[in-house]
Amino acid sequence: AQKVTQAQTEISVVEKEDVTLDCVYETRDTTYYLFWYKQPPSGELVFLIRRNSFDEQNEISGRYSWNFQKSTSSFNFTITASQVVDSAVYFCALPNRDDKIIFGKGTRLHILP
Amino acid sequence: DGGITQSPKYLFRKEGQNVTLSCEQNLNHDAMYWYRQDPGQGLRLIYYSQIVNDFQKGDIAEGYSVSREKKESFPLTVTSAQKNPTAFYLCASSIGYGSYGYTFGSGTRLTVV
Image (cartoon, rainbow over all chains, first blue to last red; front, side, top):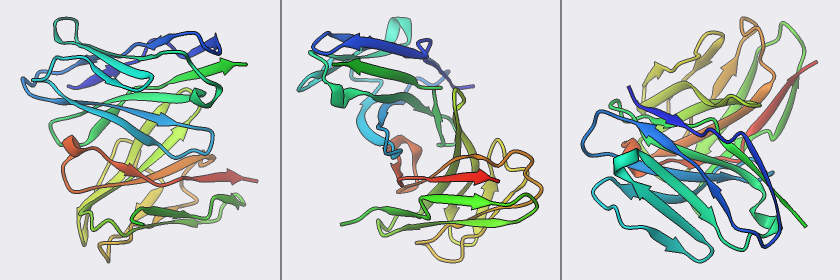
């Protein structure tokens, strides 16, 4: 069965530091998608990225980057030069065979001014 | 603008009462979902519906009920049988396939008093 593990429950860093959020997944599928969502204090989950398992290139979007390592079943998320507005809970996710998305338990990120 | 509207944002319920949480979407999405979020638990699926007049139980359906009479609407009723209903409830929708990701509402925080 699909499983997503986010081992870091909570992380605190000082503003402008870089921070990496880890995500390890389990799947028996050869083709799959992975997601990252951000949940700010307002509560709504905001989509950040969708990655196809065929595409192992790293993705960069401004200060955000994602490292997909199929060999280690990891899909890690790095924020460069963190800002206070990055404070949120971040979820890694993976659709299961019923096409429902399985979420990790999330990592709460605190960016300290 | 298209999106998902959840109401109310905050809801207080006395023990023994049923309450209904509203979820409306104007994205023309076929599938809709209800998740419950507790601290440290991540998101747990309550019910989902992939088509009008049809819905399935998720992982924690006991004490909850839903209906899907219209494509746009997927209300969740928290019944008195739910022993610990205090939580944050999130509604989501998708075009029908989890691999495309979900769009989330802003959530309803339910507190039993």
